[in-house]
Image (cartoon, rainbow, N blue to C red; front, side):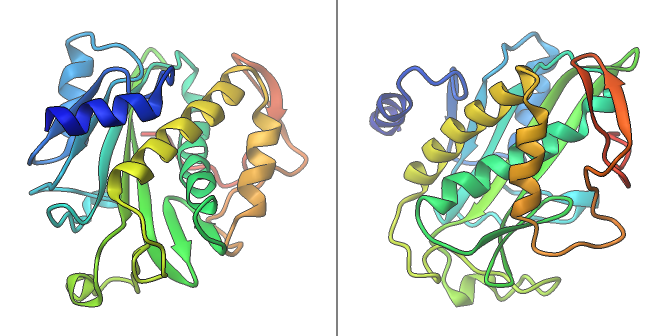
Length: 242
C-alpha cells in the first residue's frame, strides 16, 4: 500500500488535490470518511481513496457498486467559502473534471445532469457533492467520484437501474490509479478556474458535453445572479445545493 501511495504522489507532484491522500483497503463510504475528517478541521485538498466500499452511494441514496480493485472510489474535500447560491458549480466542476480526464483516454464522453458520466449512452461514472452549509455559506463540500474502470460485463449485471459500462469494456487499458490521478489534476484546474471567477468558461465547457437537454437540465441563459464572486449567468432549474 505504501509503495502504491508513493507512486500516486509522484504522479500528482505539486497538485493540491490529493494532498494529503489517504488510501484505504475498504470502507463504508469515502464520502463519510472525508466528512468526518472535515468536521475535525481537515484541510482542503484531502482525498480519500478506497479499493472497495460496503455502502457506496450515489444521488438520492442509491447504492453504488464498489467491487474491490475494479474502479475509482474517491472523495475530495473542498472549502470554497462560497455562498450557497454558488454551490451548483461544485457539481459542475466535479463532473467536468471527470469528463476532461476521461477524454484524454477515449472519445465520446458526455455528461448527464445532474451527476452522470456517460459513454455511448451508458453510465461509466458519477459524482456526488455533499455540502455543509453554515449561515448560507458553504463551510465545506465533500466531492465523491466513482468511475468504472476494470469491470467486466458480469460485474455490472447487478446494476439494473441503468445501462452501465467501464473503461475496460470500451477498449481502454488503464489502471485505477492512472485514472484517479488524471481526475485529481483536472479537478484542481476546474476548481481553480471557478475560484478565479472564470465560471462562464466552466459552464460553457460543461454545456458542450451535455448528453441531452431536459426540463431538469440547467442552462446559462439570460438571467444573472450576483454571488460572492460577482455577476455570472444563473442556472435555470438549478437544484437546491442541500
